[in-house]
Amino acid sequence: MSVKLGVPSKGRLMEKTFEWFGERGVTLSRTGSDREYAGKVEGVEGVELVLLSAGEIPRELAAGRIHLGVTGTDLIREKLGQWDQKVEPLAELGFGHADLIIAVPACWVDVDTLDDLDAAAAAFRERHGFRLRVATKYHRLVREFLRDHGVADYQLVDSQGATEGTVKNETAEAVADITSTGDTLRANHLKILSDALVLKSQATLFRSRVAPVDKAERDTIKELSRVLGVD
Image (cartoon, rainbow, N blue to C red; front, top):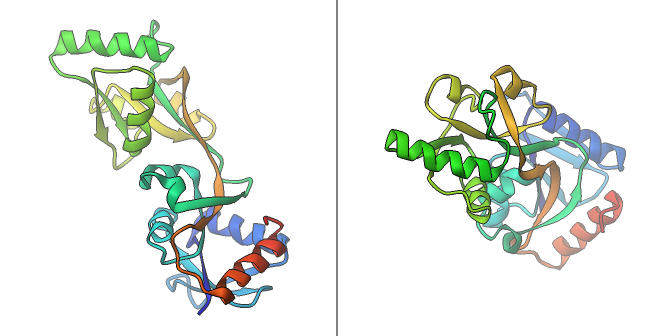
C-alpha cells in the first residue's frame, strides 16, 4: 500500500502547493490532461498523489481515505466537528491567507462591535418581527463564534453565490465571509466589525488521525515529513 497525499486539483492553491513541495525536494506533477485527476510524486518512495477539490480534502482526511492533505484551516474547522480529534496540522504553508470576518452595512454608523450587533439584532427583531439575517457559507464556525460572544436574535442564511452581494440584494442584513484584502466588502458598502475576526486561515498540511497505517506507511510518512522539514 502507499501513503495517499490529497492536494487541491486546480487553480492557485494547486500551483502554490506544487511549488511548496518542490522547494523542499518533493516534486508533485499532474499526469494526463487537466480533466484527469491523476498525478505522481517524486522524491519520496511510496507516496501517491490524489487530486481533489479543497472542499473534499477535509472529508477524505476525516474518513481515513487519505493519510495527508493540503487544505485551508477554515474548511477543516467548518466541515469537521471535533476536527482536532480527526486531523493533526503538520505545517502551515504560508499561502492561501484569508480571514473569516463578520461585516455589516457601512451606513450602520452605530454598529462597530459585536455588542453593537447584538443590540442592533434585538432592535431589528422588535421592529420587523423576524431575526436579523447573516449570510454565510460557514455555519458551524459563525454560530459557535456568535454564541461565545453573546450575540442572539439572528439567523444564519446560506449563501451559495457571492456572499457580499446578499445585503445589496436584500436577502440578508449582514455577512460572515472569507476576505483577504477587504476590497470586495468595501465595494459592496460593507464594513468589518472591529472585534469580529472569527478565524485566520491559510493553506495547511494536515495528517489524518484515523487513516489506518501499517509499518511501511508509517515509515513513509516519517520520511516525507523529514524531507519536507515538518517532523
